[in-house]
Image (cartoon, rainbow, N blue to C red; front, side, top):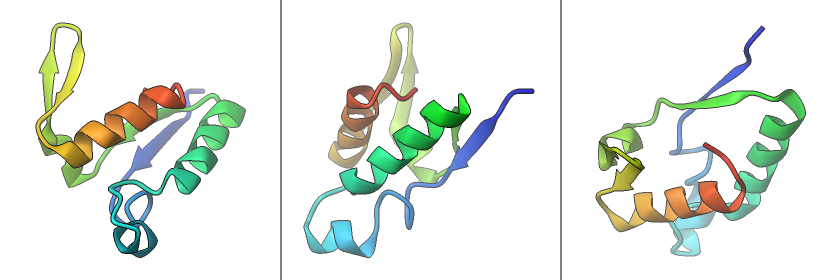
Length: 81
């Protein structure tokens, strides 16, 4: 059976703590997400409105704003797709 995590960014990876620190993504929480994905061998589906800041290209996704660029960079850093 395939396991899927439906991920909303706001309130999950973009929290009041991250906004207070003036960062787009709370990397501390992303580490937990990466561990969950690794242990459960699940896939991530982005259900957040952040998905509207992505353009699909031949080579993958391209972010249209800085916050989403940060998200993509951190997902790549933790080998999340």
